[in-house]
Image 1: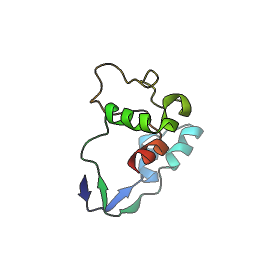
Image 2: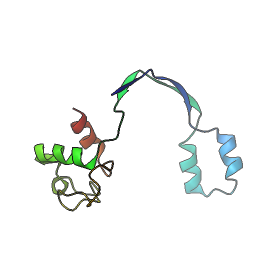
Image 3: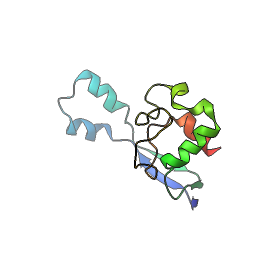
Length: 109
């Protein structure tokens, strides 16, 4: 794992800028764009993060040990590219995708 120091960044968009970029925005789009406003600072505390993505093979070890996280038990688009408990052939070292945040948290714990 790698320790990152955290810091401050500006998040969001300036309302005037958005509507200059999208002057003919429909009502639904205007509402979506307004959710991006206002620009504000966000402080991220220091944290640890894995240096490399979790692979299909590593995640399969997890779901084998924790059957409640198997594809058929979670449903939806969870592990969409897998066939049951098998990831696509030749992709054991590819990053796992289509994982819920709940499953990611359980994996991390």
